[in-house]
Image (cartoon, rainbow, N blue to C red; front, side, top):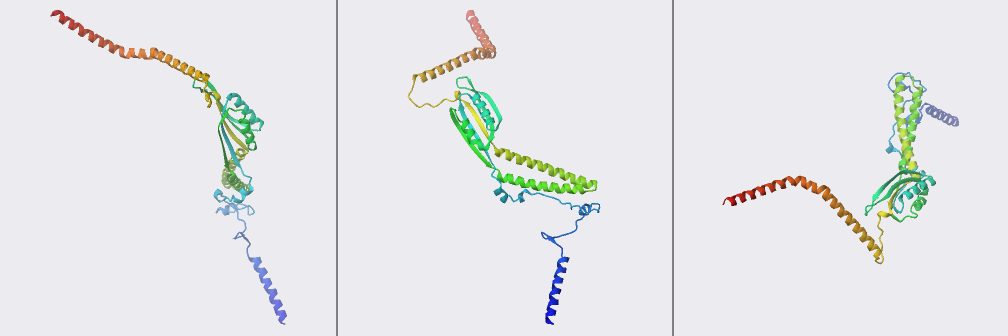
Amino acid sequence: MKKKIVFLFVILSLALAACGRAAAPTMVEGVPNEEPRGYDEALGGGDSYPAHAPMPTTVTYDPLKVDTGAATTLQERMVIMNADLTIVIADPQAKMEEIAALAESLGGFVVSTNMYQASLYDGGTAPEGYISIRIPAEKLESALGQIKADVVEVRNETRSGQDVTAEYVDLKSRLTALEAARDQLQAIMDAATKTEDVLNVFSQLQYYNEQIEITKGQMKYYEEASSYSLINVSLVAEETVKPLEIGPWTPKGAAQDAYKALVNFLRGFVEFIIWLFVLVLPILIVVFGPIALVIWLIIRGVKRSKMKKQAKQ
């Protein structure tokens, strides 16, 4: 008898537990599961929106809340490498053409070029220039070695690197969130029946599509900047640089310096004479000529008056 009572008690307990599980609402992340509501009901309106359509949601994105720590470890490091060179070369024009050809041969391209005439200390001119190229990042060392080959002097060489891995991962996470929001809004608009609802969702879609394109553009910039290194080369003509010579004194060098000094002196003296007779003297005559004439007339009048007085005496 006791065994039957125990058996019935166990069966009754299991039945009550099963009924409790069937009656309890399911939970998703702590929120009870509910029947989907219509679009207008969610907005506080009527029930014109189909009951089976997804509920409208306001999707917001906060870049400060994106966890990029784990993603950064999986993302390959993205480093933007740049180099700046100042080289002294015998023929800057030819060297510029050589660097442009080098960039194309390495799979890169020329960003900008500039040629101009630099003044020399003896009054002459010499061509100098500036060129910027982009080459594949893995060929940076090779490109710099070929650029510095056969130059008179490397005056300056600077390299800089910028790690943009975290920024790129952040943009990738932002793009994922924006695309998810866009897809949800697109589904809502496809199922909407009222014109007002369609227009409201469409305006939000335009905003998210614009943000997606901006984010893709920033990501593309980082991808290209890290894939292609920038090299800026300043080309200085050899004539503008007086090399430092350490050694015994030679009459030839002293004679050349003396000759250049004499030419500069004679040129300056002739220019002074030209300026004096062409500009300075005419100005002096025009400005001080009338004053001198008045003074001379006064002095002459005074002398005549004195001579008349002496004649009367």
